[in-house]
Structure formats: C-alpha cells, structure tokens
Length: 120
Image (tube, rainbow, N blue to C red):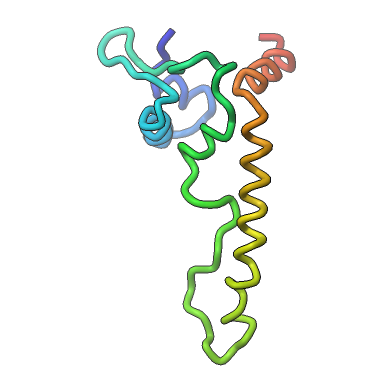
C-alpha cells in the first residue's frame, strides 16, 4: 500500500514539504520506494522487520546527535581552544553507542508498540 506525503504529514501534524524531504532521503538510502501518479505515494522498500533504526537515523540525520559549537574561538582562551580536542572523543563515543543501540532495534518493533498502545 502506498501513502502520499500529504497523508503522512497530516497524520503526524507537520508540513508535507518536510515529509517529502525526509522521504527523499529515505528513498536515496533505498529504505522506501515511490510510485508516481494515481494511487501512488511511498511505501517501505523492505519489510519493517528487515529495517533497523540505525539505517533510518543515518539516512535522515546530518552529522552526529551531539553538535559542536561552530562559532569562532577566542584564541586567547585555553578553554575555547581546547574544547573540540576534549569533546571529540566524547561525541564519537556517544554516536557509536547510539548507533549500536539503533542497530539492535527494528522498525517493526516501533510499529508493534504503537499498535499495542493505540489498539490499531
């Protein structure tokens, strides 16, 4: 079954343009397939049980979950100049741990939990 970006956007109360951008990224990652024309839309490219959450995260997220301060540094301040050196390993460790957890979770688990909680 194919779903339109407008229907998906309405179901999560957001803008269809935002949904289309996410769907474009998911399509590029080969997680969804699209069909144009009447009865068209988007559907999963594989069963939800064959898609882990890390695949989705990596398809739609740009960069690590923790972001660096991109503003210019005060070159006279050792804290300002040393922050990236100190935080880089922490950011890498957090991102690695997050991906490990997401790899263990399948999309179908979320779908089933929603169905259990809503009765649908």
